[in-house]
Length: 209
Image (tube, rainbow, N blue to C red):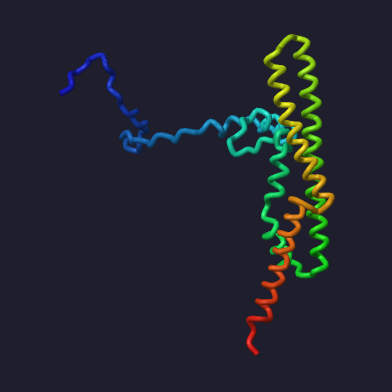
């Protein structure tokens, strides 16, 4: 049970307006609806979408977790092994189904080898730049007497030289069609021939005559 508070103003609905009728009796009139502000006040025009505005918007936007981040480390030796570890047999099989002409087999093998050489050159350039930059830091930190930092830089340089030697070994094998390069070619050729066999089996061998 609530107590009466004489100081609390009770909420009252506004009384409807009254007008006099023909017999001088007041007639209630419904309240007029509220008019929105934008009827009389013109809203400020929005700025047109331009390249500059879009650039500023994208610059201030925080990157999401799904946004890929490109870095120089993408060109290390992992890039080369990722290329060589692709399913080249499946690629050859699909290429045979699209174009079963055997003349395209040699062309596709040559294109595959060119892609491998281009990837090798990209990785070599990365390590050459990295080693030069590391040597500069070693010389600079040595002059400052930073022994611990110099030792860490020397270790990084040795690792990079080891990776560089492996890349040169793969490059040499690619020039002689040996090693990993030969394995890629064999895998692609096997897939291409399996694709040709699948076409023959589907078009000829399954037909009854």
